[in-house]
Amino acid sequence: MAESLILLAVVGEESRLTTSHTTLRLSHSLVAKLLDSKSDAQRWASLSGLLPRLAEAAPEAFLDALESDLSQDSPGALCLFEDEERPLGGGSRHPYLLWALETLAWYPEYLCRAALILAKLERLAPKPKILNSPHNSLSEIFCTWHRNTAACLDDRLQTLDRLLKREPDVAWGLLLDLLPNYHAVSGNTAGPRWRVKPDITPVTYGEAWRAHEEHVKRALSFADLDGELLSKLVPRIAAWSPEQRQQFLERIRRFSETSEDDAARTQLWKSVLEFVSRHRTFKDAEWALPENEVIPFDEVLKSLEPSDLWESNLWLFNEYLPELPNPRGTSVEDRQKEVADARLKVVTTMMQQQGLDSLLVLARGACQ
Image (cartoon, rainbow, N blue to C red):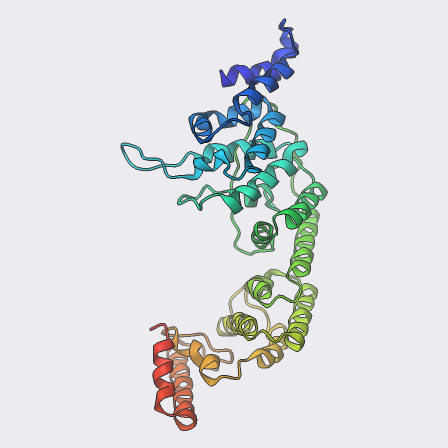
């Protein structure tokens, strides 16, 4: 029946079928009745396997039904994210819903609505145990370098801006995925079976560079002077341009000068410390930044460092072989000796200044 509805909508007019309504309107009407406002969890569950076909048959009716359902206090569609008991093991019905929305996202006219629904599902639905999730669908659809929608870059950016306003927390997570990354992977999303897929133009270097620039600009604007958000950006800035890293560095400096939130300052300090240590410890790696690009972060490290001796040195004891911000040797043996010397210096200082109790606190706070 679902495929019959698709054929009515897609090829009905060309086949000159005689009905009381146009075949397009007929498909829309039937899908709207199947997924009307009275649809409860049982209805959504019973139709789960047909959702990609119903979406393809009547996109507008399908999107209307989902938007209406998700506006209710207890949306019926959320039942699809609950684990399903099966004879040979559990499973989930929600991938069918995600595939339906991924299919519609191929069409520029439906991208924004499909993306907003996916964002709302990410916020409201239980977190799935499998890879298929609203967040991952959004990340694939908006992938900068692999086409999973025919929408142009400007349309995708406009949709992203709407997501940042309507679903800021979900959009922030998506934005982090879209930032430049040396090791990103992507795959194909679900596509239409009967409808003609829109024409797709190859991704050019110019488009990818512009997309990266726009995503970084939005990330910096959204994070502003929020220490927690800025700390999420630190591991990603190595793939940015020097100019973009300089803009980020200015944000950290302003945060350091104005923020009195000790917890946020410490969190950002830890992220910058890990960033600096990683790039100096593995300075010969292809991905490592040159020393002249790392040096400016020493200043913000010093300004953000916690005044508490325990807080500023606990990281040394949380791993077997932590990366140091100013390593001298390159071999494992050299690193082991440097870490041992650093730990001994901290323990000696704490013992002299704060006594044995401070060492017991340090031991309890360490991860190992």
